[in-house]
Amino acid sequence: MKYTKEVLFCARYLSGSGITSETFNDVLEHVNELTGEYSIIKRENRDFYYELAEKLRILWPPGKKNGKYSWRGSVEDIKRRLITVWGTKLEGKSYTIDRCLTVARRYLADFQEDTKYMKILEYFILKDNVSVFANMLLDDEFVAAAEAEENYMDYSTEGGVLI
Image (cartoon, one colour):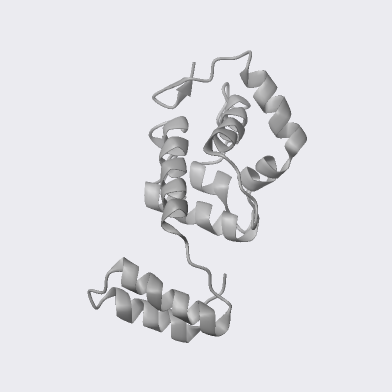
Protein backbone atom coordinates (compact mmCIF):
# COMPACT_ATOMS: atom_id res chain seq x y z
CA MET A 1 0.00 0.00 0.00
CA LYS A 2 1.31 3.41 -0.88
CA TYR A 3 0.37 6.41 1.18
CA THR A 4 0.62 9.94 -0.13
CA LYS A 5 2.84 12.44 1.65
CA GLU A 6 -0.26 14.19 2.94
CA VAL A 7 -1.67 11.06 4.59
CA LEU A 8 1.69 10.20 6.15
CA PHE A 9 1.98 13.74 7.47
CA CYS A 10 -1.53 13.55 8.95
CA ALA A 11 -0.75 10.18 10.49
CA ARG A 12 2.40 11.53 12.13
CA TYR A 13 0.57 14.63 13.33
CA LEU A 14 -2.41 12.69 14.70
CA SER A 15 -0.29 10.03 16.39
CA GLY A 16 1.62 12.73 18.28
CA SER A 17 -1.47 14.67 19.32
CA GLY A 18 -2.82 12.15 21.81
CA ILE A 19 -5.64 11.02 19.54
CA THR A 20 -6.97 7.54 20.30
CA SER A 21 -6.46 4.69 17.86
CA GLU A 22 -10.22 4.35 17.34
CA THR A 23 -10.50 8.00 16.33
CA PHE A 24 -7.41 7.67 14.15
CA ASN A 25 -8.99 4.67 12.37
CA ASP A 26 -12.16 6.73 11.88
CA VAL A 27 -10.08 9.45 10.23
CA LEU A 28 -8.34 6.91 7.98
CA GLU A 29 -11.68 5.30 7.08
CA HIS A 30 -12.94 8.73 6.05
CA VAL A 31 -9.81 9.26 3.92
CA ASN A 32 -10.41 5.80 2.45
CA GLU A 33 -13.98 6.73 1.51
CA LEU A 34 -12.77 9.90 -0.18
CA THR A 35 -9.86 8.36 -2.06
CA GLY A 36 -10.54 4.63 -2.22
CA GLU A 37 -6.81 3.98 -1.82
CA TYR A 38 -6.29 3.01 1.80
CA SER A 39 -7.38 0.00 3.78
CA ILE A 40 -7.79 -0.19 7.52
CA ILE A 41 -6.58 -3.19 9.45
CA LYS A 42 -9.55 -4.32 11.47
CA ARG A 43 -9.07 -5.13 15.15
CA GLU A 44 -9.62 -8.89 14.65
CA ASN A 45 -6.93 -8.90 11.94
CA ARG A 46 -4.51 -7.04 14.22
CA ASP A 47 -5.11 -9.75 16.83
CA PHE A 48 -4.47 -12.43 14.18
CA TYR A 49 -1.14 -10.87 13.15
CA TYR A 50 -0.07 -10.40 16.76
CA GLU A 51 -0.92 -13.99 17.72
CA LEU A 52 0.78 -15.38 14.62
CA ALA A 53 3.90 -13.26 15.24
CA GLU A 54 4.14 -14.54 18.82
CA LYS A 55 3.72 -18.19 17.78
CA LEU A 56 6.25 -17.92 14.94
CA ARG A 57 8.81 -16.38 17.29
CA ILE A 58 8.51 -19.39 19.60
CA LEU A 59 9.43 -21.74 16.74
CA TRP A 60 12.66 -19.94 15.81
CA PRO A 61 15.76 -20.60 17.89
CA PRO A 62 16.76 -18.09 20.57
CA GLY A 63 19.91 -16.01 20.33
CA LYS A 64 21.62 -14.49 17.34
CA LYS A 65 22.58 -15.85 13.94
CA ASN A 66 26.34 -15.63 13.58
CA GLY A 67 26.35 -13.40 16.66
CA LYS A 68 24.84 -10.56 14.64
CA TYR A 69 21.09 -10.80 13.91
CA SER A 70 18.41 -12.04 16.27
CA TRP A 71 16.83 -15.26 15.01
CA ARG A 72 13.43 -14.24 16.35
CA GLY A 73 13.24 -10.46 16.08
CA SER A 74 10.59 -8.49 17.95
CA VAL A 75 6.86 -9.20 17.87
CA GLU A 76 6.20 -5.72 16.43
CA ASP A 77 8.72 -6.19 13.59
CA ILE A 78 7.31 -9.61 12.75
CA LYS A 79 3.74 -8.30 12.87
CA ARG A 80 4.65 -5.41 10.57
CA ARG A 81 6.18 -7.79 8.03
CA LEU A 82 3.18 -10.12 8.21
CA ILE A 83 0.86 -7.18 7.52
CA THR A 84 3.03 -6.17 4.56
CA VAL A 85 3.02 -9.71 3.15
CA TRP A 86 -0.75 -10.02 3.50
CA GLY A 87 -1.19 -6.63 1.84
CA THR A 88 0.98 -7.50 -1.15
CA LYS A 89 1.79 -11.18 -1.71
CA LEU A 90 -1.28 -12.74 -0.06
CA GLU A 91 -3.84 -10.06 -0.85
CA GLY A 92 -7.35 -11.45 -0.64
CA LYS A 93 -6.15 -14.77 0.80
CA SER A 94 -7.19 -16.13 4.15
CA TYR A 95 -5.12 -18.73 5.99
CA THR A 96 -5.39 -20.17 9.47
CA ILE A 97 -2.68 -19.81 12.06
CA ASP A 98 -2.30 -23.60 12.01
CA ARG A 99 -1.52 -23.58 8.30
CA CYS A 100 1.01 -20.78 8.79
CA LEU A 101 2.70 -22.67 11.62
CA THR A 102 2.77 -25.90 9.59
CA VAL A 103 4.62 -24.09 6.81
CA ALA A 104 7.07 -22.55 9.28
CA ARG A 105 7.73 -25.88 11.05
CA ARG A 106 8.36 -27.57 7.72
CA TYR A 107 10.81 -24.83 6.75
CA LEU A 108 12.65 -25.22 10.05
CA ALA A 109 12.76 -29.01 9.73
CA ASP A 110 14.90 -28.63 6.61
CA PHE A 111 17.54 -26.86 8.70
CA GLN A 112 17.52 -29.08 11.76
CA GLU A 113 21.09 -30.23 11.20
CA ASP A 114 22.68 -27.06 9.82
CA THR A 115 21.28 -23.54 10.23
CA LYS A 116 23.95 -21.90 8.07
CA TYR A 117 21.51 -21.07 5.26
CA MET A 118 18.37 -20.75 7.38
CA LYS A 119 16.77 -17.30 7.31
CA ILE A 120 16.08 -15.30 10.44
CA LEU A 121 12.32 -15.04 11.04
CA GLU A 122 11.99 -11.50 9.68
CA TYR A 123 13.71 -12.45 6.42
CA PHE A 124 11.70 -15.69 6.14
CA ILE A 125 8.55 -13.58 6.15
CA LEU A 126 9.83 -10.81 3.88
CA LYS A 127 13.14 -9.52 2.58
CA ASP A 128 13.75 -7.42 -0.52
CA ASN A 129 10.14 -7.96 -1.67
CA VAL A 130 10.62 -11.76 -1.58
CA SER A 131 8.63 -13.86 0.86
CA VAL A 132 9.62 -17.49 1.36
CA PHE A 133 6.72 -17.67 3.83
CA ALA A 134 4.12 -16.46 1.29
CA ASN A 135 5.48 -18.69 -1.48
CA MET A 136 5.19 -21.72 0.78
CA LEU A 137 1.68 -20.76 1.92
CA LEU A 138 0.51 -20.34 -1.66
CA ASP A 139 1.78 -23.78 -2.71
CA ASP A 140 -1.17 -26.04 -1.86
CA GLU A 141 0.71 -29.23 -2.77
CA PHE A 142 3.59 -28.29 -0.48
CA VAL A 143 1.20 -27.52 2.39
CA ALA A 144 -0.67 -30.81 1.90
CA ALA A 145 2.61 -32.73 2.00
CA ALA A 146 3.76 -30.80 5.08
CA GLU A 147 0.47 -31.49 6.86
CA ALA A 148 0.65 -35.19 6.00
CA GLU A 149 4.24 -35.33 7.25
CA GLU A 150 3.23 -33.51 10.42
CA ASN A 151 0.75 -36.27 11.20
CA TYR A 152 3.68 -38.69 11.51
CA MET A 153 6.20 -36.45 13.25
CA ASP A 154 6.21 -34.57 16.53
CA TYR A 155 6.89 -30.89 15.88
CA SER A 156 6.39 -29.69 19.44
CA THR A 157 8.94 -27.09 20.43
CA GLU A 158 11.08 -26.52 23.43
CA GLY A 159 13.13 -23.34 23.35
CA GLY A 160 12.96 -23.03 19.58
CA VAL A 161 14.28 -26.53 18.97
CA LEU A 162 12.13 -29.10 17.25
CA ILE A 163 11.87 -32.28 19.28
